[in-house]
Amino acid sequence: MALTEERVRRVLDVALRLGETLLARQAGSADVADSVLAVAAAYGVPEAQVNITADAITLSVPRGVPGAPVTAMWLVTSRSPDYTRLYEATRLAQRIVVEKPSLDEVESQLVELSKGGHRYPRWVSTVSLAVMAASMSLLLGAGALVVVLAGLTTALIDRVGRVLNNHRVPLLFQQVVGAALATGVTVGLDAAGRLPAGQAPSLVVAASIAVLLSGLATVGTVQDAITGYLLTATSRGVEILLSSIGVLVGVTIAVRFGVLAGVDVRVTPDLSVPLLSLPTRVIAGTLGAAAAAVANYAPLRAALAAGAAGAAGSLLYLVASMFGASTVAASFVAALGIGLAGALCARSLRVPPLVIVMAGIFPLVPGLSLYRGFVDLSTGQYTPGLASLVTASGIALALGGGVVLGPLLAPTLRRELGHLRGRRTAARGHRWRHGHVHRLPALAGVETSPAGAEPSTGQAVQG
Image (cartoon, rainbow, N blue to C red; front, side, top):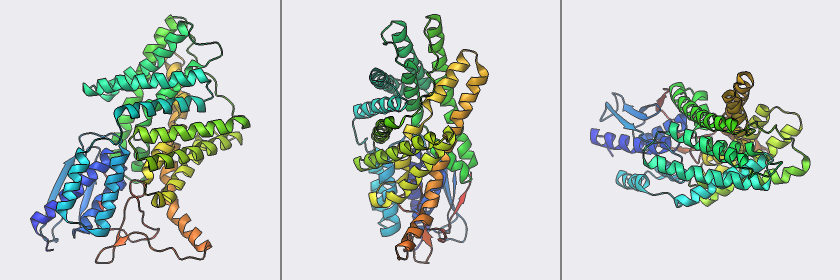
């Protein structure tokens, strides 16, 4: 079909709306740019240029293309993880590249995608968040009562947060309330003598903090920084920082009341990892990762894959710790394994790698280090507090770097495995009429380009 200005505008509109869905679901900017350019090229607009910021996508077709120049922009008004919509959007992008359905059909599907409800009722997400917190406390070595308390406290935080969100309370203040509840409930029960001796109330708070921070786009932020989208990475980093400050304020408020009530708010020391506890903690990692996927409305198949990734990551982390690796190094090794396995298995499982890695790394979130740092800062112990927060930041960077590096190594590993089996690895991707390869994203998408494949002719402006 001949390109006219009207058709070029429709193609840009379709590509932008698809990109907006991916960006709103916390996909990395590089993945969003690849998807937008691949969709535009599939409909005969190969010379497009895309610029992505934290809340906007701009797509431009320069002079020299029939129907150009044209520039269009789409705002991303809200961002929240929804793995089902991420999956549907990436599947639609793949279908566009392969089959090139009519624009009318794609526009209709995009409308359904934007208006569709969540896969599960809200209470399912609340229960899943409670399971996440219970699993995290079990990973940290808590007893049965603390595990139950962590789950119930997190469920309460989620319901209160839901009410605040309906009243359009900013995320910063939602985090303040959530952290204050997590700490206040535990401190209150301890002050009332409702916690048996020998229990570790700090693990309840650490688990709840891990859940509060698990929905942040840490992986996307690190991916943006690595791939050159520094402006977007900075913007996402500021959002993470503000949310963390909200948690700090909430913890500080509750800790101050706890100190006045004579409650011991000190953090339980890091527990050793005896060999006999490995099966229990691997099971906890499996449940926590699968619950993290369900809490963000992932399909059941994706939740099972995330659970397997959580088990593998927990095992790698615990084994590395037993062999003397530092917390940061063990976290990187575990995240690298999760990212690599997610990229290798995503195609056969028909699950976006981002879903697997985002949920799979939940058991590795440094909730205890963060709580230790917050408590130290709130009680005037600034040097150890800052040291704990630096450690937590190092763990977060290690997690993000590991899961981003894994998919980058996957094509090479897949090719080498094919050579060992005596098979030639077929070229990945799908070619358009001029012989170029549509590159679909490595983390957000279902397919990736092989190493050395020729990229799409569109350009992504690193914003």
